[in-house]
Length: 153
Image (cartoon, rainbow, N blue to C red; front, top):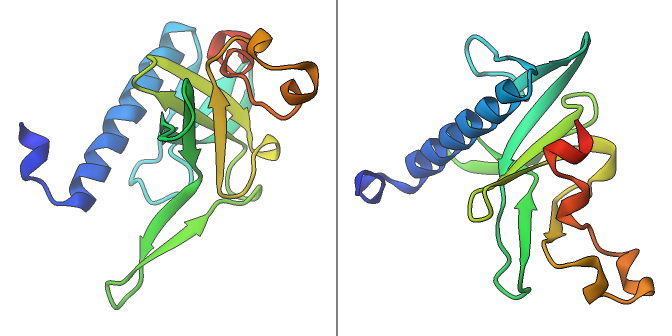
């Protein structure tokens, strides 16, 4: 496989490009215009135009949680490289982005989350039925069904 021969950083970049392409396609299918930075050096990956309202969007890939069944986790960091070449994790701010579009490739689903709804570093989404949780626990769970593109856009 082509990706196996790539170094970790390049594999990560390739996966990000694939995720952005998938999300762009999903938005266009729903009639949402997508604008991308010309040189890719902005803190956002795209701008979406929802009936004249422009939103700066960061696209992320979610992964199956390794300890929680039917749950995905997304990390909201990005890696920037210092002049010395050393990697450093950074996090986004409300001044940089308005929302996240989170693609879950193993579930063929994309989730939409406003920046204000997120924790700084990561977020989990359950694909279990709400009835699998008691009323008290439901308040603490982010149910993927509530964040799908069709539910929110």
